[in-house]
Length: 337
Ligand SMILES: [Zn+2]
Ligand SMILES: [Zn+2]
Image (cartoon, rainbow, N blue to C red; front, side):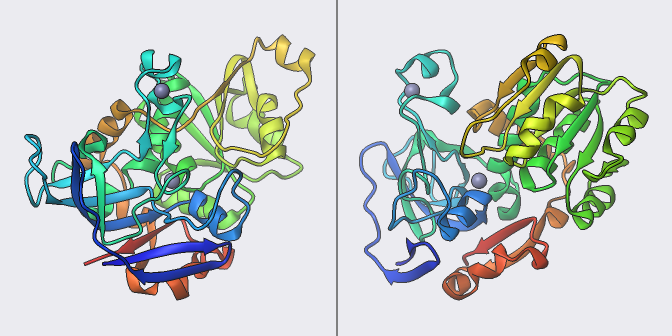
């Protein structure tokens, strides 16, 4: 079978490898789609912390069961969404149901090999039924689950004012789920064309650039109250450190994007607002199920969200094009037949 390996930053190779044999409790999957995410782009660029090479990337996976291997749940041909987070089930986080931040968490395609291969043997516990979603929809469940998890963690309520910083796939997902929760959403990005995208495709009325008039723009949008919840989906230090400024007294600031180093907040400023500063990491099986239900209802603009398609055989030579800002990539999708 064909496997694509990220040998080192900037280099993919395609190799012929042996089809894996599923072990007890595993099924053999045939991979159909692989969503390309910021993590993959960073791994390819060589600026992903704690990343080791060579690595098979791919954690946003749509698959069908090739060999159920005696499973009582799955049969050949079933469409499945993969939860790419391998958790231990025994640690302090897992025992509280917070499998998304297991102390021994292994993410497929990050800490261990992922799905950029034709066949993949995987524990059947990491699979969810795809409920007749298209392969494209199935492959965007994971990034949208990360967004849904953040919105749930922020306890967004109807009528609240929400700011989302960053109009990448996760930011867009947060906008959609915050809107579904009944919030009024404002988007912030340094890139006007991305703001245009969320106005047109996601129906976000208010969009702001981090310009000199930003504070006035925000006062105007929120009638001086600032935002009940602010989400950072950029992972940039400057955005992360400025988030609490846009948040109302008693508000919540959600750190969804990940920066590499230390952050500095002025204590009197965050104290005066009795700020809740919350990190949001990955997603749980419940978040995946919530996203599958939303996609099933047709409330998400999948076709607009997936801006670039790439066939599996073209990854080695054309993956780099997904990293170029002028190509306006929101979500790239690798296709296998
Ligand atoms: Zn991802
Ligand atoms: Zn655990």
